[in-house]
Length: 490
Length: 94
Image (tube, rainbow over all chains, first blue to last red; front, side):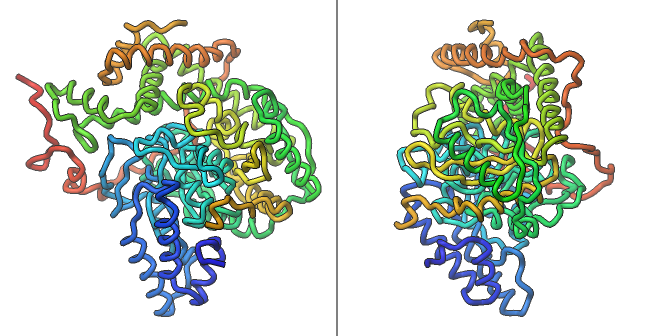
């Protein structure tokens, strides 16, 4: 067994026992990245110096007899829309090419304080807008299971890096499925915590009422270890919650689905769902039944409005958030400014890619005079309706189980010509963001072309413990998280 | 509802985007299709549902207490042009 093949929990124990050094662990990760990333292109920046310094710090602490931290010496990749001092943060946009943030995100700060070693920044759709990582201004990341296919997105770089064994852990951000969908398409775990569970300080804002940082990992226990340390209140994010985090690692270790009532929403099994994806997800739900969960059908009647609601709310917020890129404060500035207004508009037009422009335009349109009530206000009411669907379902069941994505990984270029078809690939993940609920994607076997399928579990707000315990029980019983892509043997 | 080219031009001005003729044509067609899809919201009976204005339960404002903020030097570090501790822009008033 090579060091790069081990998960976070195993690596942490080896480092804590001083069976291997953190430097050996991170060197194995950096070697794997050097060998494989020229092909897969998961990383936009490899922070070798930061990584070696952090690893040496781990080794020094342990040699001085300090108690090992929860993720001592574990390599981590960070999506390139989350700030880390000492490395660029580009959001895969020409707008922020070469920009270095003046502060580190709270979630990263906490992961590093827990002993994580930052190896680099991963590729994404520009400003996290997309579902395939093809909107990256630096080119797409390839799916480790089939290099002619997209890894999903927008956290496609993080998902591919974890799936290919370049790192055991990564941070992503999820606005409409951007952690869970690439996790599903790359055959790994992705957790979107409850809105407010993880501080957004230092996450470049896309849609502030939907964005949430979360972990990607190869098993549920590793995801729980990272979720545990990045969660919690932060005075620098006014939407961050003061609720206790709970014992997420303990919940994963309990791995208990007994007596849990699982609701299967009938609206999530309609047209557009690939037959083998449906088969794998239904089989996973059966497995939960054999583990002592009870299963019943539920209804989330407003599901058909979720994508429309999302693309009004998310683009409205994006058009406002991205107004900050003006060629004045940071980022790209045009060489031919003319007056101040031309400076703004030329800088923006030169540096934003087409999907970002499309969303800024749609968001500006739905907020503009004459359309605000018809689109934006109406979408906020629809959002209430979607949230109430879940409130109603959670009166009868403890968790909702459904597919993460309607299909397995699609081919590079398959959906880029038609933005709407790309938007519809988020149909099952968007509702958890709109309703501010925690949700996880766990591998549940193979679908079309033998590619990975994700089972999505959605819980009531702040019930991450329940989510992780049931997901871990499923993972242990099914063994599905142990499937590895062909590049594993490279 | 079709989106006219002049509407797209108007929205681009509001969004401070300078689009080429080709981009305008292309975006008008794509936005029309997306707006047509989003228009399904008009079929939803929202009745007296309150709008969901906040995603965080009980989000609260922090106490208004003075504290350290980003130092000016760091805030200006990423600026395309700065001098004397300020951001530099083209002349605004003639």
